[in-house]
Each structure stands twice: as C-alpha cells, then as structure tokens.
Image 1 (spheres, one colour):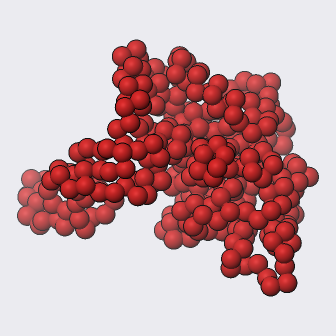
Image 2: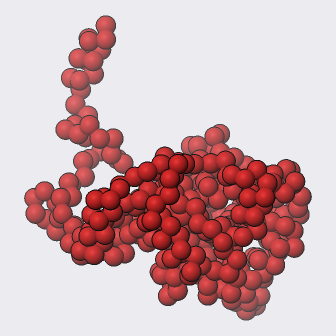
Image 3: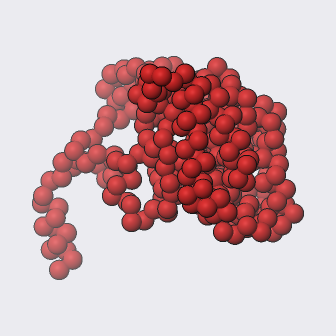
Length: 327
C-alpha cells in the first residue's frame, strides 16, 4: 500500500518538481545564487542581479566583504560553536561590550539570539518573567500598533499588527491589543500640528492600558521607525517621549523593535537615539550581522537584569544557537 501510494503520488508532477526544498512559493523554483560581490548576486547561469533591497533589508555591508570573510575564517579556525549554557566566547563577550558601549541610557546587558523573530520572542518572555520576579503576576497583556511587524513566530506574530500575516493563525495567537500607528500622512487632521497629532495617538496607549486594567498590562511594543508593513513611517516630534511617560506612569515596559530600523539605518546607530528616550528592552538583528551569519540580540535594561539576578537568578529561555561564536 505504501509503495503504491508513493508511486501514484510520484506520477503527478508538482509545479516545483526538480527540488526537494520547500521553497517560499510552490509555483516556481527560484534561481540558484552561486556568488555575491558588493551589491550584486550572480546565479548559476552567470546572470547578475542588483540586490537593491539587501535581501530582507539585511545585506547592508554588501556581499563577500573581504574583512568580514577573514574575521569569520579566523573564528572558525579557533572555535565555530560552543553551547552558551556551558561556555562563553571571546567573540560573544567582545560584541556585547561593543553594543553596551553604544547602547541607549539604562541598557546593561545583551542577550544574543539568531534573528529578529527570536529577539521579539525573547523580549516578550523576558517582560513576563520580570513581572513574576517583582511580584506582579497579573501583568500578562501586550499592546502594540496596527500595521506593525515584529516577526513570524507565534508570539511575535501575536503582537504584530499585520492582519494578512495573522489571519490564518489567529486561533494559535496570544491575546494582544493594537492601537493606532503614527501615520501622519493619512491620519493627522488639518487642524492639528504634528506635535498635537503625536500626543493624540500616543494617548491611545493610555486608553488601552486603562481599558485592560493597568495592573494587567506588561508591555508596549513599537518600532521607532516602522519598516516592512507600512513603509518607513517615522514618528512625529514628542510621540515617543509621551509614550515613555505613559509607560512609566503605569509601570508598563517599553519594548523597542529596531530589528529593521536599527544599526545605523536612520543616521544614528540606534533609531531611538533621535527621540531622546530609551526602552526597557530593545531588539536588534538584520544589520547587526548583515546577512553573513544569522544573529540578533535583545538589549536589556538594568532594572530587568537586576530583577532576574536578584530573584530566580536565570532567564527561563534559550536556543541552541544563541551566542554562536561565528555569528
């Protein structure tokens, strides 16, 4: 029966027959990239492609940079990987020191992961554990913004505001609330200044917190500059300062998602620098590794680290490849 079924299925050619890879689309096989050089990718037939978007907004250093390649070879010659549950590495410690030196005020530790979605998941779980450590176990709700994107794993998808990505997985998602984004072009009224508009939409956060009960809200998640799902939406003056005030007033953690907009893409290393505030947790990825290895990180404030260090003593989370030396 098994052989017959297999034979019958095999006789029907699939649209992407010729590959055993489950590619992103089943209707075609993408060209095979065999070489990269600067801003170009070359396929198996020698055709060149201008990588204008840097893949998924990742390859900001270009392809095949000789300094990056040399550094990777040097690390592999020493040690490619050691489990972070048992070992640290010079590479991990040095990168953490580098990120700490440039981090927004209040950041104390760096938690490494393998990408943006993992960073969001870690930040959400860290926020939840923080409130358990300080004796506020009822804080479980997360607020985010409509037409936002924070990753594709279930927790990250739950707080994201892209309805098309969420729709078929809704039964699996955790409960999250969504307020208006800062979309000045569409939503600012004719009788409003940019500052007045920013206060109006920021105050939606306070309304949402009060509706859920301030004692029940754990975190607000926002991209300082919105990326893929809305198209490079920058905040209006004063918006994030008001958001920070609201979070402080009600004891809600502010999680800043700089996976796409961080690491120098807005003129400063961290986009939030230009807003004059800091987050309690901040996620970074994409430009951090520029596509040469999968890597992301969560920048962790001192108050969160201290709560865990003085409480249970460990963050109850982890991935096999976190802190990967070569990455």
